[in-house]
Length: 100
Image (cartoon, rainbow, N blue to C red; front, side, top):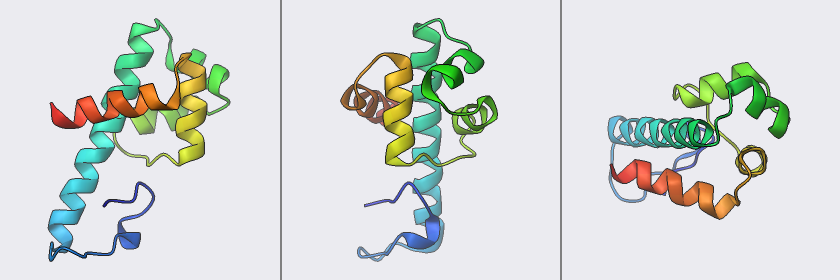
């Protein structure tokens, strides 16, 4: 299992090395960013509009979409609300992006 918050908090229990965990975390960050960007585009929202609707900053959303930021569960909840979808729908979109 991978933590979204910090690479150091990942405890390897399956024998994977640091590089493998880092690559997995990077892939997850990319999937989260891709999902947010796609859903935002589908909703015809700018980063600024999503920021205002979710109570997050535009720069934070930009970093998230580019895979440079790691969301917390609270920020995922706020983003989902700002996008007008459930957290479960957002999680499904992230999962779909992970698999593609």
